[in-house]
Length: 285
Image (cartoon, rainbow, N blue to C red; front, side):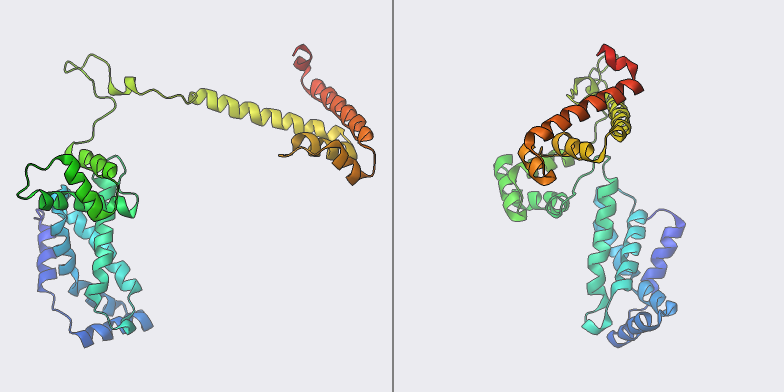
């Protein structure tokens, strides 16, 4: 299971560690919680490393190094020790099992494929249980179609049939590079050549961002040419998410809506003049 000598030594040490009686375990957990007694924490962790090794063996079929799984499980074990409350009268192994399993599963999901999967709790359950459920449901029923099996698995895990089919396809085939050639001779088109995107090219996106920032700077500088009332009318009429009416602004400013219109026209002329002064090329537009 573990090839390197350091791994074998660790396994032997974990298996040789004594089991903790309930009262002794409670005492150690209380010492760690109340006084942050590092020696007490070490005793708890060492006594439960066999649990980590046992759980790592259950995940070995995902093709990842068992030593790495043990390391991830050890992290989960430490997390459990940091959060454990001895006053709840629950054995530490019962509490730690969830944290160890969660740590190993997260590691598998991060490293099993370059394509991220199992991002939701339902997808995670599907990833780790699909093969087991499919094998169990298919025992003695070889005539069952994939459609029927997918539906039964989906019902058992509370996901859609489509999610089961997609996950089954992912688990049944390795990752494929987008740069892999479609032809065996390696001289033809690549898979990426058939991916079409309607999104603008990156240089266009960057160019648009730069243009927007430049124009925003021009406008901000040109607005400095307006007086307070002109600026308010332009902001309310032209720059807000919802344009105020002439009548609404007239009531707010205590003037007629016709006067508001005149001030707006004059402010727009002043803005244009300020923009042309900054950028004479606007005259040609």
